[in-house]
Image (cartoon, rainbow, N blue to C red; front, side, top):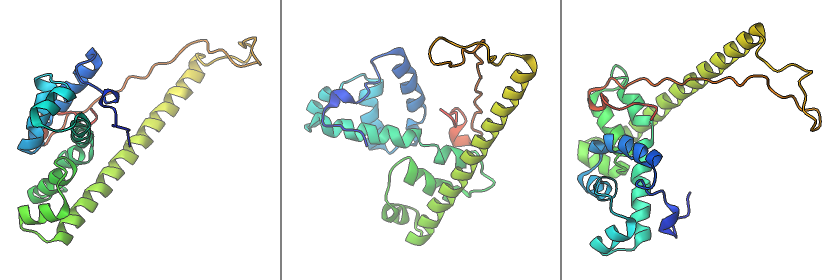
Length: 202
């Protein structure tokens, strides 16, 4: 867990172009949050207020704001709900609502049970089902990525773009690559209606 005793250690989304791009992806999922969390995130990301400014406005410590925004953004970038939402054939609407409330909104099992009129055990079973499914999707993606890497490696061997043994540096005989291979990563848009504009691998 990150140390948030100093708010300056928390990434400020306004600092660089990269952070601003990241903030845009975060904000694209903000509609999934509770009104309270969305309003807090809007003060920082959309309105551009610093942690200190928000803290003065709300009458709390800057570190409190930093922690809350960090937790909100961590939930927004978690891939469990987007992965499940992209597979509506596996999850009923009620199940997706439970998954959203737990992984995105940060509600407790007891709160979810009361909000949806289901038992605590059913809510927990749904969350466990989502975790298992998301884990299997990530494992499959990892295996495919490794398989693709192996394929590119074999292609490099055939085309002679791997480093030769006679291409050594003067430093302890390490090989000096003749050519650097780049790998392009592709993103697949989510298909669930609630996430039609969100990339699952953001």
